[in-house]
Length: 244
Image (cartoon, rainbow, N blue to C red; front, side, top):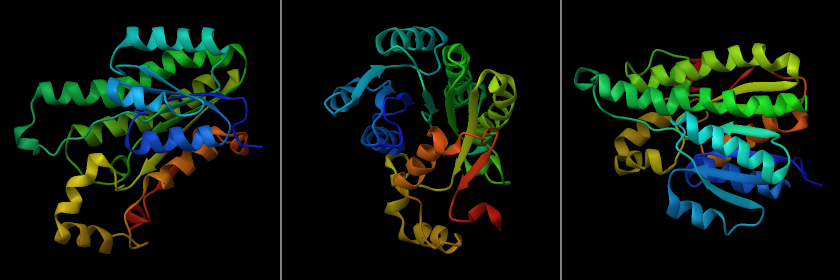
């Protein structure tokens, strides 16, 4: 028996990287998983997996979120889990960052999770049960990254706390995960610089970079009934980097 048997889960950014790893793990644990992503080609591949349904979603669109939540609820009868994982990053220096850069980052990384909770939580509340897991970043905890990315992940941190208090009395739990540097397609540029990679590993107490499965397993715990008395929490999965 899996930890998520008969549960219905939506995972954004579910067609690649950490999101894809979560989709695979949640499906293995018995869930019906909606891999929500903007990449249609990747969604087609995702839909070929057992118990996985690829659905197109622009997380920055209020209308897309409203339509997705309605479709999933009507098609599968309920929504038990939402993982707000989709996001983008940027390496642009702060001196070159303009309002358009800021707005794009905050619309996807900040508004995306907000809209997801706005439209999905009511379906959970109607059944007095649900778990929402938001993916923030270790950059929201320490003074690293004077840029829109850190700002957007700080927004996720604050929104998670607020949502936990807003929806808790309706049976909906909301928790946040704070990954460190994880080896994914988004961070693959790190592997091209052995010097940079070495410095990052040396700066991490556990002496390695994170893997997608490290984050997926943390999300599984918070999504499952194993964490039924946990809400408003912050689970840091960064190999000890932010503890220094």
